[in-house]
Amino acid sequence: TRPAALPNDRRFPADFVWGTATSAYQIEGAVSAEGRGPSIWDSYSHTPNKIRGGGNGDHAVDHFHRYKEDVQLIKALGAKAYRFSISWSRVFPTGVGTPNPQGLDFYNRLIDELLANGIEPFATLYHWDLPQALQDRVGGWASSDTSKAFGDYAAYVAPRITDRVKNIFTINECGTFVDFGYGRGPVELAPGLKLPQPQLNQVRHHVALGHGMAVQAIRANGRADTRVGVAENVASCVPAIETPANIRAAEIATREMNGGYMTVILEGRYTDAFLAYAGKNAPSFTAEELKTISSPVDFVGLNVYMPQYYVVASGDQHGFALVPFPTSFPRMDSDWLRIGPEALYWAPRNVAKVWSVKQIYISENGTSAADRPAGDGKIHDLDRVMYLRNYLTHLQRATSEGVPVGGYFHWSLMDNFEWSDGYDKRFGLYHVDFATQKRTPKLSAEFYRSLIAANALV
Ligand code: PNW
Image 1 (cartoon, rainbow, N blue to C red):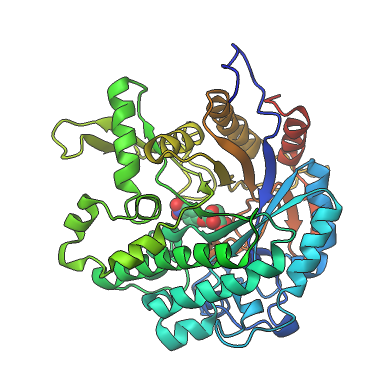
Image 2: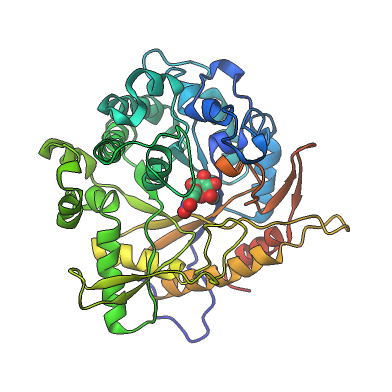
């Protein structure tokens, strides 16, 4: 419980967790080191014409070898936490069967280094880098064998890190990698398939099932104080204008527009509208699977980038209508990244309200920005500073109104391999010279450092 917001209160709660986030394939490199098996991202990024500029993650930003230096970058921000992901194919080179005993060594070194520097590790088990062998053998998430293999991987990892890692995210952004990797997204991600609707819905279901199996495996093999959740790129439903009717419309939209994952994970059922819309393309599933999928979580992670604006609509069956973006609506350096600072208030506020979620983390928020060195050796990414200042103003509104947001992880610590955009889009607080691997703080790193130091908007 927090005191009511004071006028002009710009502070965040005293125990608010400020962090940064990354993922394995986007930063590590060292793709053959210490017994790692190939993932679908190795294959995909080596397929001609898939990645802008032809890059791949073979070396990425060499974090595997530079992790100590990178922990110092986190420390220099004053950040209290760091969200990283574990590469499944380092631990199980073919996804299943015999573990690679060296696979977790790197993460154990990283975890120890973080703790030695006073930074709390938050681990993600799956950030899109499926072991290639699982794709080849059973079609990846098209088969529930992959859901089960994911549970087994979680069961192996949990007892080996939970003495030091207290918070585990199962899967990062089910919606993004399913739609863009197996469906027909505007962006394409590995494995780059375009499945027909029934199979796509089955993939969706198997991913949700994999999450649930991992939750159960972590409960069974972790510790009593291990906390587990998901990190989802929810539809961040914002009332276009803040009237009671539009606010209600955005709440209803939150449940309906997140029917594929959040609703089934938090309620144990698909929405009637999702099933009616899918019709004969609906996934096949059992009541037992829905129970597994909705195994209780300790927190919900929200990856918040762009808003979706809604208004009340009397003609619609649910009473809401999406307001499409006008072509002139402002965006950041990635085509898809429309600017909507209010998303960082409404996404957690609506998720907390609709599903009575008691603990939320903003597991990602950030932006691409074309930050070229200014010539004085500094990188003046005023656009990222502008973005951050505006978004965090709305996060502060959320915490000051008592929305249970416990922390914020900025995406990303440093520039990295931005999936299909290769090295062309930069999301880092630190600039990375990809030729020399030199890291340089941008103006936004300075902004974030002073914000963390004050624990308030400055
Ligand atoms: C997230 N979209 O991906 C991922 O979790 C990160 O790995 C990624 O680097 C980051 O956001 C920036 O892209 C997204 O098109 C990719 O809406 C695409 C979309 C959203 C999130």
